[in-house]
Amino acid sequence: MKLLQKDYRQVTLDAATRAMLDFAVKMTTTPDRMCAADVQSLRETGFQDEDIIDIAQLAAYFNYSNRLMDSLGVEPDAGMAYSQQAKT
Image (cartoon, rainbow, N blue to C red; front, top):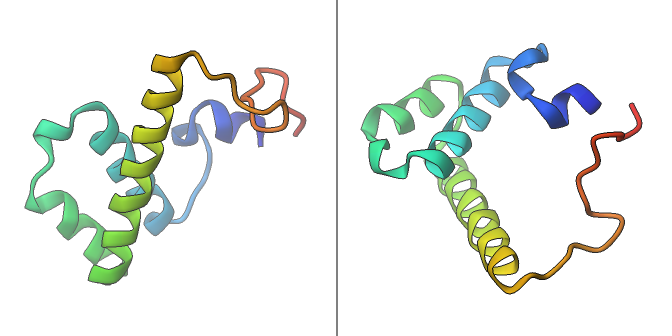
């Protein structure tokens, strides 16, 4: 689990999970570069349009809530904080 938290690209994942995470990362880091091909890559791994909407909405919600909490200096609950020493 520790490696997955640190960098999912270093873990063996099924194609659909990797495509979903790649989509969420691109949406988070370079949203201006999102295009129809990104959605198509999710479809090609088996996601339906309803799934893709859910993926995009969840990624957007986490981006929003993290930025809001960061901007206000809100600390996450102790159980939710990312830890470099997370147990495997």
